[in-house]
Amino acid sequence: MHFIDRQSPKGIRVTQPVVGLEWTELIYPDVPCFLRDGRSFVFDSSEGPQVCYLGRKVTTRKLFPDRKPRHVVITFDGRFAYYTETSDKRGGSLTLFRKDLETFRSEVLFQVTGKLPGTALPVAQFPRIQTVSADNRRVATTGCSLGDGKTKDAPIGIVVLDLDCGQTRIVAQDRDFVNPHVQYCRSTELDASHDLMVQMNHRTRRAAPGRPAGSLSERGVDAHVVRDDGTAWRNLPWGRDGQESLIGHQIWRGNTRAGVTVTLEARDTSYGWADGTRQDVVAGWPVKASRQAHTGRLTPGGTRVELSKDFPHARFCHLCTDVTGLRFALDTFPVFDGERAGMQVYFASAKNERSPLEFTYLLNTRLNFLGPDAGTHAHPILSPDGSLLLFNSRASGSKQFYMVTEFER
Image (cartoon, one colour):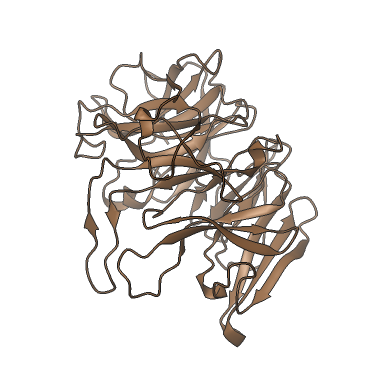
């Protein structure tokens, strides 16, 4: 595929590691996918989740013998894949499994029928797991509906399952936890390993069943950090100042306690589409705040770094870092470069966590959000050591992922 152009670095290599499958796709950039060797990684495919082993000859191995679609969460250390199985029988049941990614043996970590211990929520309300703590002892879910299915704007809960005691707890709840992108901090420091980053979509209002949902600006999305016992609520210093809003793409900055996000201009009603708008990359540290004070950038004591401040015409969209948080893979909104339109991919690096990024354009994925591309984004991923970069495309006519090497000089 012709991803490289005259702006690409000399010597850059783009290959397709896995061929012969109807489709392949990378795991979303805000969750881990690499195994503990730092080279092998899990990807999704038409035949279910698989591991790709890089070497002189690339090989793959299915995580499961069947083609049943499963949502798996890879642990930060790359040792395990967590997944659940549910049943509607006998009031509903849930089983949480952990698959060893070296032996491929699965073990049961948690099993319950009827009600979730600690919260008395029906098992049927337990959503899919989203993230696993750095010590592999706790899992947190995506947003869990706490309503009765009839009430407008019913609260959504962030649920944590503690595997040591077999208890669940609701660590935070609000009607604005729509698509909260819950992420455990990747740091192995004991205190940091209990921190969860959560997104709040203040623009969204869900109507009662059968009625369309409304949308209110309320200065848009913000991001918070909360300890997984429900204490230590903090704001991240981004957005909600009337000038800057969030796209909702934020991650922990490698294995550090800082976060990084992509921002929008608050008055950009195109949501990043319009030429002449900016979508910048900004880092920041959590700062103590009241749960009622969704003040974002205006939070007293907030510290941030404008990582793309010197980059002309910033149009960034998704991002991923290596373990240090100093190397980045980023894609853009579709950009027309004079020859073709598409999501571009960049590599970036910083000297230290307080320095702005230096960006290197790599390639054009030829994804433009339209027609058959509508369901596919580049979603670039960087290996833990920052030496290889992966991205999605449909340039071949089907959804496939590709690998970039030899891009850092």
